[in-house]
Image 1 (spheres, one colour):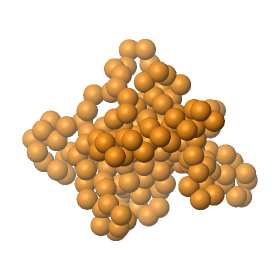
Image 2 (tube, rainbow, N blue to C red; image 1 turned 90 degrees about the horizontal axis):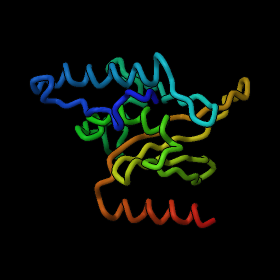
Image 3 (spheres, rainbow, N blue to C red; image 1 turned 180 degrees about the vertical axis):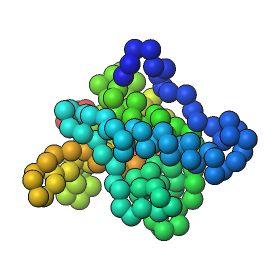
Image 4 (cartoon, helix red, strand yellow; image 1 turned 90 degrees about the vertical axis):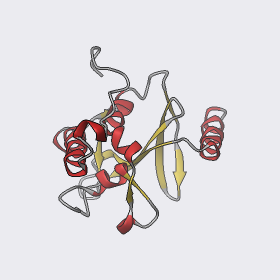
Length: 166
């Protein structure tokens, strides 16, 4: 991260767009597009990419997963706290070695995941991927969200601490 960049990056707030949802989501998407489509961050020398398909309203699936919540992929609800923090995702990835970001590895089925937890308040989840046609290795951005519920924090602490303690 650039030394002069604020850490964490400033929030993108709906009120800055006069409460106009269309303008707001366009600004949020513009930040995401810059950080994960036009350019991509790297972690451990591997590119971090977002899931592109399916495209909905001209925006990649990875974008919607980082700005909305819900179990049913077709009916996710916008989450303003996630939207506000869209610029945090790349910054957290780029600062994964810093003292403000806890990092560990876990498994979800056969998938190896890398949670990046910023100050126990915002979680970015990456998964290891290998492209079958040419064995290209990269991380895929799975999701990012605020961790405000104490039950979720307890579970993440337990997982992180178990990983630290071997």
